[in-house]
Length: 185
Length: 412
Image 1 (cartoon, chains in turn brown, yellow):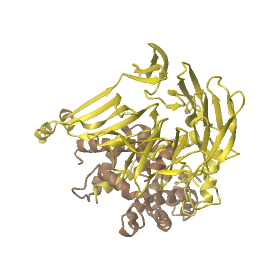
Image 2 (cartoon, each protein chain N blue to C red):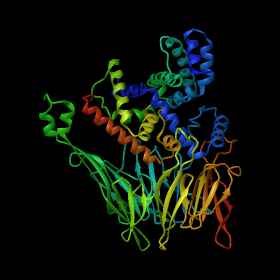
Image 3 (cartoon, rainbow over the protein chains, first blue to last red):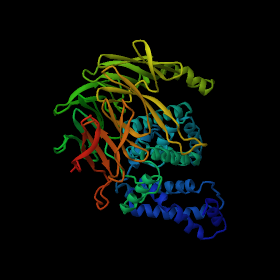
Image 4 (tube, rainbow over the protein chains, first blue to last red):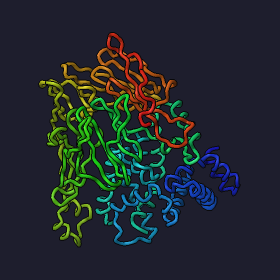
């Protein structure tokens, strides 16, 4: 079943939409969740919450690429879960490392509450990503969207770990400079 | 919300086209590394068999099915055993641990015929400023190189023969923010060549005076930051008694010169690697897949420069790195077979078919071959891959004919 047909089912409020979504994307969504949570039950719950999130947001949303839309839902749900103390105690996977790496891009002198600021930063980041070499952009997203470990990125891309670490570091440094220039810092 | 979480959330809202690009990129890389359907199907089967804790979906395959990071040099095979340490293996003997990984320190290492070189840091955001040297067969650790001004010293990928290609990162008030790519002597640690550099220096005094200026932000930034960059136009290498010079040309590639004569056009001023005593330079890639020919298989071009005065230009459809010596190159092709290629005659031969032993990484010094293979599917204990050691059997004409098993699992 195509993504368009599944999205139509959501719009028709046909519960088959969730069955079809599960059949097509369960493994992918589990993968997204597990990388962040490193816990089987939490990951399953995040995926189930994703189906609920999809049901509640379509309509009015009508995504063209269902896979990435659902992936974003799962990622957000999983990140919220991992930020809870109980989950951190279970090991936290790559989240603590990724958090520390990004803390060097933006320090925590002040806290941020404004969702509009997040949206604005997201738009700015798209422009930043567009300027990167494809290879560097892919590695950046594997690390900070999918929360893959450096070793996994190296293995999947066929690079050495050093090459991956250097690419990530240089991209973070470029991002810090760019955000500084635009007064985000 | 902490600012790091702000960025993390903002990255999560990235345009979907970039996420699709990641999938496509990995598909291409996977096709290059493992061949087409057979490799992908095998990964999926393996992922489902060992999937009670890891249920991951193509094209991501398994998240922990890593090959062993390894390198051959001085008759040894060095490898990292995950969460344990760096080991040294002598064919026919037990592996010995030479570097311990406790509390998750990270190592990067490269190997040449003289020694193992490594850097070490405590976690993914901490960096060391030191390169350590461990001569083959010894347990002594020497400090080869240290740069107090650098924020970090990095070993990106490979030794350049007797020398090392090193990247130095800086972030201080003196040099500013940037990096230097250098070649250092593998014996003395002396910097022999600066390949390229890039720096941004901020004029703090001027920045402060401009803080409330009406000048446009971009213009302010340009006025308060200076950029400088340089590329060393000529880098020289020694191969036996020969001197090869890599000279940057107007097209952005490098002319390889010997005795003033251009012998090759290389995409990289740094040699691809060393095979035996020879240096191998990369001549780029052709026949890459396009929209019109999506199934095209890339061809990689190389120049081998030997100390005996000879050189050969070759083209291979190889997956991953080349391994071998001055004459014979071993690599995995797109059918996932292990190929031996004679660089002097251009003859190639299948040494081992993928069906005989499922492997995906090969290391060799021309005497022994190490194959990283898929784990025993009956074992759920560990997702790492055993490394098998074979001795290459040569015929009376000196041509590789077959492999003799030496050790089924050098980790065991």
